[in-house]
Length: 271
Image: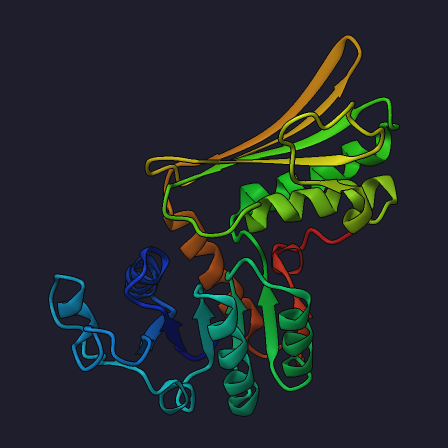
């Protein structure tokens, strides 16, 4: 890359937002040129470095996303579905790379992202880490190799402030299992068990969500048959892995054609 990548971070007061700011500041090929928060937030109008409790960084937090998008190459967005949809429209207008780590998106939200991707490069993933995306590939391969004698369960654990379940990563893993098995996840998914549910339906892909403490992210994919079990596992202990992956995606997306991509594309893992 011949030029310094100019990056905007949305939702800068959040855990991921602050981690992204630090990650960009430490990267020799990237520069933070914009920090966005919602209107009325206490950080708006402050220098982002000062707001985070450190030295000034020369970037003022703003609630006017388009004003900073205009001078950027990419925006990294870990916010909420409604906000992400709005940012996608603005990123398309500015012809930016839009890296999306937001989870909990509904079908209507995804349709709007697809529309925006006609004019911008959208890279969206439920998880930005290398290890998780390798796990996705392994899950697809194992599911393809095993028949329905093996029940599939996706078990995920996160901190007690996470607002959506199953996690975006769990859904990525469930989709990979469904793809490997050649079934529709919407049909095979089993997300709720309470009371007298009856026996497990053959071929279902089950999900379980754990919320507690400060767990960064743990994901297991369990393949269970009579007499044997296979467990694929990823444990994240540092949120920085997601920030590094998101920045890698932003740098990769520069110069790409408009369209929808994911971390499998970024990491060159697509078969």
